[in-house]
Image 1: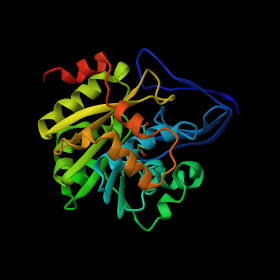
Image 2 (image 1 turned 60 degrees about the vertical axis):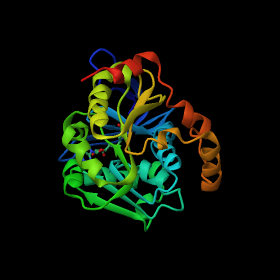
Image 3 (image 1 turned 90 degrees about the horizontal axis):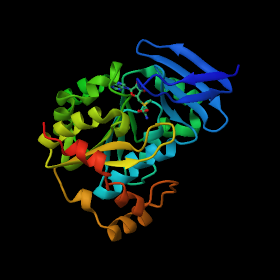
Length: 285
Ligand code: SAM
């Protein structure tokens, strides 16, 4: 089979990817899962018509949501990933030898089972790592009831449509705050500001109320089309966002991780915001 898939995320613009071979197309209780091969990006995972990850460019997204906060913090031991059923985030987190536990809370168990089978290039052996804990639950309910404390919480969710919507609400962010250890960091998938500015604005309005320090940082991921993608950042420790180049370089060298996008210079540059994005997050409530 060969055809084209149009992403249905944006009203006035669509990403179109050629499917050289359809590998999977099925509905779970929560969403439609589609997987196909594309000559440029390798395997492409779509949920409900929206690109989630591809073998070709996943490293950018996953490295920037893991190594950046881990190295900015310097003493991350316990990590919570909300969403992330493809396992790519888990795999990057576990590259750090001093991580003691990584808990993944995914609403849809079929995404995990599917990813183990079809996306091993993305998740590697992460689901089998003894430090991995899997919880099948709605992420918002999980953090609301959770008594554990984490040094880093990563929201690796779908966009705020369908099951992912609750992961962009005040209730969720407030509960996340109470699950963070002192000085802990929250980072979030926050869409492409040029096309999804209101989403970033909404998140930052809440994060700025809840946390002493909140902002966003950027990376360009080819299949999240429309310009750079924004990642939300929040912590009650405002020194983490200003960790110096010298310290980042020392931590990066000590971590001994192989990266293809992340490096300490990219880390610092990612917090430089073009005017149109700075304006979005500076707008008062
Ligand atoms: N990189 C991605 C993107 O394109 O934004 C996210 C990838 S990951 C596959 C997103 C995961 O979040 C999905 O597997 C989905 O089932 C999960 N998810 C959505 N809503 C959720 C919720 N309320 N609680 C926990 N997991 C959720």
